[in-house]
Structures are given as structure tokens and as C-alpha cells.
Image 1: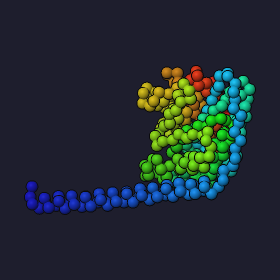
Image 2: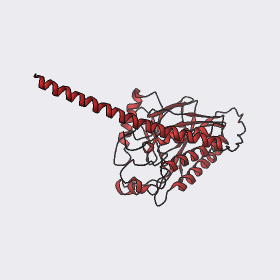
Image 3: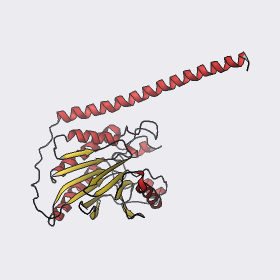
Image 4: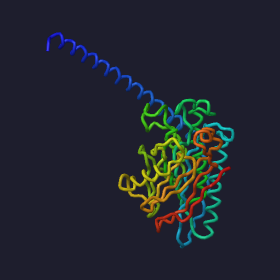
Amino acid sequence: MSIGNDLVLAQQLEELQGALKRAQSAQAKEKLKTDQIVAAVYQAAKDAAVAIKPPKVTKPKKDTRKNKAEVALIHATDWQLGKKTASYGVETCGARMEKFVEKVTHITDIQRKHHPVREAVLMLGGDMVEGLDIFPGQAWEIEAHLFEQLFEAARIIEHMVRHLDAHFERVRVICEFGNHGRIGRYGVNPRGDNIDRMAYKIAEDRTKDLKAVTWQSSEDWYQHFAIGKYRVLLVHGDEIRTYSGTPLFGIIKRVSAWAAGIVPDFHDCYMGHWHNPASITIGNGNRVFITGSPESGNVYAQEHLAAQARPSQRLHFIDPEEGRVASEYVIWLD
């Protein structure tokens, strides 16, 4: 190789190194900007929590009956808060979720006539907000921007938690985030920088005064927890890729693979994302529960998927000693 070629290669190497440094610098600045936005939101939420006095809650009387108790398992997911359709918007979302939590406690009181139900587990399944710039043309379907979506979602979650705390001796909140909560297009920003997660954190900070309430969350793509002997896998549902409605075969295949040892052992898997309530039994006897959405009037689903679901969420009662679902309800909200 000639000296001239060596010089050219050296010059090219120097240019590549310079380009790499500039790219790394730009990436670091972008990450710093995102981190600063996240930190600012958390600080604003903390300041608001200090400024506003939470309402006093009268705890329920302890149920001292000795017969077998069950646990209320509540799945709230896919609110798409901020989306605007002919029959759905921010106010509709708030009203429907208020109706949902009232139905939860009403059905629980019916169950309590037969046996104790002292504890509630609230699963927040993701896509609590509609997000912004998730797909082309989304701006034309949005009623509220990210700031309003974030704080209204946090307000509704806080209201639900306080309502449950007033009707149960103990409340656990399990938090999973969805694809609509991400900031920007897929892969642009860190997966963990998610509006759902911010709303959960705000609501958690706002309910610090509730001593019987605990929260579980992580940056993982799933949440795993137990109610006595009953083991639960909570995912959002976007892990199964399709563009043609609810992919039952794809869900069975993926959840069966998870049950083969990919994730910790579980009995049943809960997911949202597909906006249509359904239940499936997979090969090993485990079940998959798909929970609907409080949304209605989705023109995209009508036109492209030939599908339209009634607004709903899910409520189960769990027998913790037997490790199974004792009864299950789809709660209709229209």
C-alpha cells in the first residue's frame, strides 16, 4: 500500500472519529433534554401534591368473619385519554371510569354478603393516555395535548385509588405502561420515558397519605405478582404484532412461549391493547384475559379492522388459597 493511500485512510479515519464524536454529543444532549423534561414533570407533580390537601377517607370496618376470603382483581387499561371521537373524549373517559369503580365496589358488596373481600388489586395496564405523534395523522384525533393527558390521567387514577381505599382494608396497585404512552415515534426515545409511567408516579406521590395502599412498577415489559397461590402475568399486549384485529392465534403462541419458562411461572396472563374483551385457554390450561377499553366510536377500527367494541373494563374475584379465578365480570360502561 502506498504512502498516499495511507494518508487517505488516516484522513478518513479522522473524519469518521469526528462524526462519531458529534453523533455521541448530539445523542447525549437529546437524552439530557428528555431527562430534564421528565425531572421537571415529576417536580411539578410533587409541588402540586404538597400544595393540595388530600380529602380525608373513612376506612371500612374490618371484616372479622372466619370463612374463606377472596380478593378483588381489577383491570383498568387502554383509556386512550385525550382521544376525540363522536362519542368519546376526556370528560367521557372520566365519567366512565367513575362509573367503573362504583360498579366494582357495588359488585364487591354483593360478594361480601357471602364471604369476606378485604383486599383489592388494581392493575393499570397501559395506554392510559392517547399520546402524541405516535402515528401519522394522530394530531387530528386528539382533544388534549400531553400536558393535559398526563395530569388528567393521574387525577382519575388517584380518584380510583382513593375510592378503593375507602372500600377495602388493603389496596395494591400494579403498573404496566403501553405503547401510546411513549414520547415520540417508536425507538426515538428511551422506552422507560413514558407518559403512563409519569401518570402512575404522580398518582403514587399524591396518595402517599394512604397507608394501606402499595404500588408496584418497573421498566420491564411485564409485571409479575401473586395473590396468595394465584400467580399473575400482566402485559400491555403490544408485544404481539398484527395489523388485522385481535390476533388470537398469535396471542396463544406468544403466551404459551412465555409460560414455557421465558418469564416467572404464572397461572393467567392479563392484557389490554386490543380494545375487545376476550378470554382464551392455552395448551397448559393457563388462561389469557384480554380487557376492553372505555373508548367508543373508533373510526379507524370501523374502517380498517371491521370491528367496534362496547366500552368496558374487567373485574375478577380471586380465591387465593386455591390459586384460581373464582368469578369474572366484564363491566360494560356504555
